[in-house]
Length: 533
Image 1: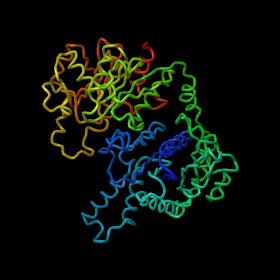
Image 2: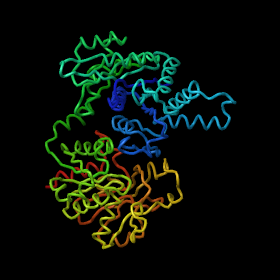
Image 3: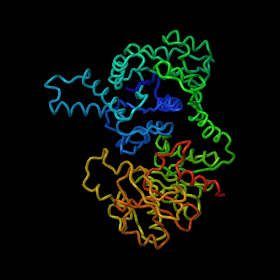
Image 4: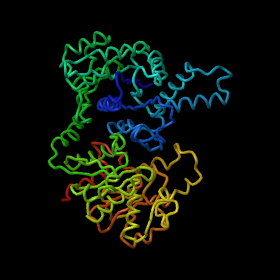
């Protein structure tokens, strides 16, 4: 049976529970333990697949086709854990499962209640994520903030699990805020005291406190927090604001968090450490000698989290090339208003990511045209590939008003059209082409040069595809179809023959990039961009 670490948050949201959970996972892996991480989200949506990116941020996609919270991206970037549908539990999933059981008569006519039926289902799904995996530790992050009505069933479930499993098999870590009041020039512990007090009212006593602060906590502050929150002073861990999230595991290691956790859950200490992480990630980032400017042309630029994996994968590509990145975030509608020349004149690479809907598409097309004509390295992802096809059809093939049927159902040249399997689908949630699919790569091509193999697997999230009826005319004009899904003959990767580096893919390579294992396409895109002047 694996050990369990439950992670909760207090005072305010957005303190970084996901990164804290991922960092703890990295620490434990460095000591030879096999882990997985679960995110429990209190919202009623079954998954975030139908949620507005401006509200929720990025939807992270797993190999098994789950649309999940972006924190699962942190889990996979920091650790070797492979997450899937079982790793993202929502209130919607829990209530849906319980209601289905009630309709089948599985509760033998009993009244269905939050306790025990909802809490039992939460516990069951948490335990299900580790079945058959031979894990040492399961880390469970509870979304939201202590005191939220929505998260109470999850809090009650982990309270019960802590009691049922016993003190050496389950611990609670609470991430809280210790604010610094500039006008008084003082660090204030009262919000943390209240947060822990609220947690203890629910019946959960934290074993470790991660104290987020912009100022380093001295021994006196830690002692005060320990006294009023009923924890040992050594269990008060500073979580100082960091410019680089990949440094967080190292700061936890310096404070002995890894050894503290092992003591509490009764696991044997090892001699593992994070020297490789420090050398391969932090040292390379700190010693980078070049600066490369990349423009990201998006539809949801105003919310940082909407393209979280894109930004991180770009950073990983920079690490691989000893290059610091300046990411210029540009709303695609700004290009429509002000022109590509004005918005993109000082960039060395252009990336167009995914998205849905007509808004901002023409700005993306203009940006792609600018990259093509000016020989600027270009990477298109999902909608970025589709808009690259539309741009090429209009401006190189002479197919006037070519478009996607997503944006114009009556276009005379539907170079992008709805997947055949999508035509009769009415429900929007969980019904796209999702998860890992095969791709065969032609050689010699830039894509093969990046991957160095002919057969790959990448993650997808889309309803529309390249219309194969236009393959011949586009190929005759210089668009090279270099990646094909062999099962359904779907176009996966395109390149331009007369361009230094122009690659666009239907899948989402950003979901498989790690700081110590950058994705091949991002690595080579940054390499090409860093050489562009």
